Image 1 (cartoon, helix red, strand yellow):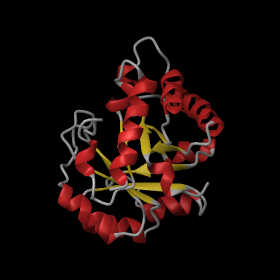
Image 2: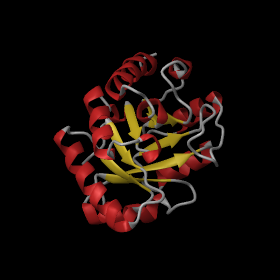
Image 3: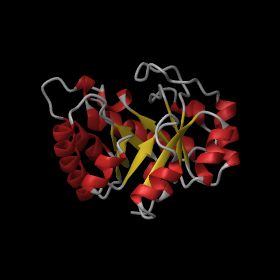
Image 4: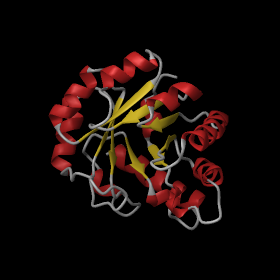
Length: 213
């Protein structure tokens, strides 16, 4: 699957933390019903067998909605289930190594906090960048704060699409207008919501307005 910039408008990153008595499949489906345009499966503590099972189910679900589906960090699982791609952080495998493993047709996203990291990731074959944290966030203990000026500089320095991540809500999304991003990535703004389809739709509407400025 080749990446279309429009696919990155509303990028939903999964988190089991808020599931309660629901399954990950159910809440991801709700986010897709609400208009999520990209899904990343992020699992830090699941054993391989259950991770594989979950990944296969979600891959099929996303295919039904024609939405790209990538795995966070785990290149081997992405390969095993033939996911659309993978997203890696700075401390994970280099984008060039990931590309060598996955081949030319898979989507590779890379996290970046500086212009230097962003330029290097593009040079090594990244298809898009996730830049953040652009607001304070509780989802990652080691999140690096990225100023909106740095976000703007990164967008100018690379030709691949850039999405903002970290602490983004429906209320603060408009503050990212004019930075050059093509979308936002969120976790709790969707998956911690009581009404996931409604929260997703509101986020998508505000993001469409924000990225067009």
